[in-house]
Length: 376
Image (cartoon, rainbow, N blue to C red):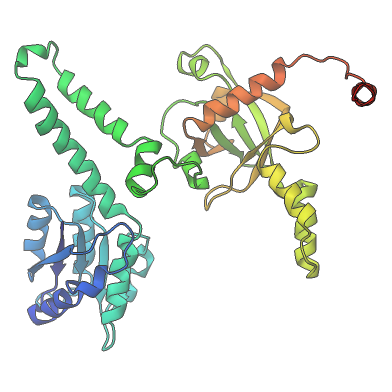
C-alpha cells in the first residue's frame, strides 16, 4: 500500500526537502496498524491556486502546507487551502511554516501545526505519526475499499440483469446499508484490531455516539441540564420515541461517581497518601461492574471519557420532562448518545428492575443448618 501526500510550498527546494523527510522509511516506522514495506509518495505543488485545483480533482491521504505565498506577500495563503479542503474532501493537514503561530488556533488531532526550523526533521516525522496513529487515514481508505468492493466485486458479479433493480434508488440504498454494516462498532473494532478475533472488552469511548445524531430524542440520549449541571439518561423504549407515541421523555438521573462511597474511599486514601487496600479497590470495581453489594440492580455505571464524566444511573430516581421543553435550547444540552447494543442493554436492565417480584426472603440460615445436619 502506498500513501499519497500533497506538499504545498511556493519554494520548491524547501518542498523537496519536506518530501525527502516524510517519505523516508523512518516516518511510518512503528505507526499502529501499518505493515512493513508501506511507502509514502509525495506530490509537490508550488502554486497555491493550482493546489486548490488538485484538491478538487485528486485524492490524498495527508497535506503538508506552508502558509506564506512569497509572490503575493500573503502570510496566510495556506489557510485558504484548508478552507478549500473542508469544502471538497477530508484530508488530515500539517501546517509547516515559519508563520505557524498564525494558525495555532486551528490545531486539532488531525490538523497539526509545526514551525519550520533547523532541527525539525524528527518533529515533522512525529507530526505525521501522530496523525496516522489516530487511524483516520486508515478509516478513509477502509470506507473507500468497502465501497469499491461492493460495487465492483458484488454488483458487477451478481447483478448481471439491471431489471433486478425494480425501483429508482434501490442500488444506492443497498450500498448505503452495506457501508453502514461495514461501520458497525463490531466491524470497526475488527478493522482497528485485526489480530483480535473476538473482542471481549471495549474501550469506554465505544459506548457512545458523539456528537449525537441530529434529530428526535432517542433511547440512550444523555442530557445535561444547563442550570443545575445534572445529567439524565433517556430510557423510553425506542419505538415509542420513533413513532411519536409519547410527549414526554422518561429521565433516569445519573449521579457523579464521586458521590459514592466506593469511589470516595479510594479518593481519600490517595489524598492522604495511604495505600489503597484490596478491599477498597474491589468495592470500586464492583461499582463499575454493576455488581454493587447494596442494591446492585438499582444502579448502572456509565463510563467516563474526554466528553463524558463517570456517572452512575440510579433507576429509583425517575422524572418525566416534556419533549418540547427538552428541545428548547436553553434548557438541556444533549451530551452524547449510548450506542447499540449498550442503550438496549441498559433499557432491558431498567425493565428487569421494575418488573421484579417482591417476595419475602427464605430463612437461609435455617436451610443451611438443615442441609449440614443431613450430611453423613
